[in-house]
Image (cartoon, rainbow, N blue to C red; front, side, top):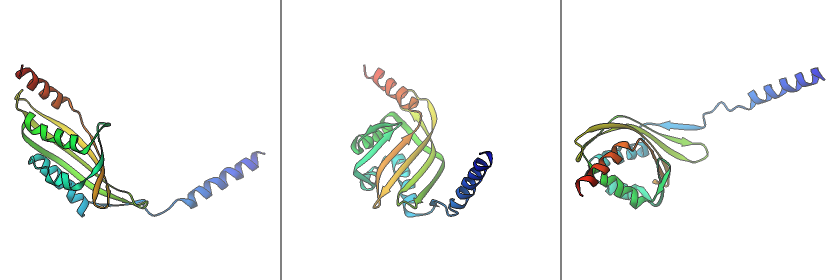
Length: 164
């Protein structure tokens, strides 16, 4: 019985190793149209210009900010609100690439640091941001953003206090 289990284990190991594909499951590109589109979306956000956002995000784009679901219109309005809360919005430490998966899915991953000075507190603060964009037919059908919203909450609170 011990020999049978040993042979079975060895057979499974050999079979598993021989079944592994030597090819990658995705092609990663850093200088393609979709990667450049993601870079331009960020640039347009900083410039308070949302026409490219309107163009590239599908009308029914699924949007998640820290896993909170919103629609495209609410997302764009929220991004515009950042320009009311903050002055001198800048980004740095940017890295972006697009994954072209064998199953047909296309995802762009984007990391950057967002630095802003509050219009109401006067404080300058930075937050690291990560976004994922799922593309279909040249449009973003899913947009996910992950970051610490503390700076926005603090600035919105200060704005609300000043308007009392």
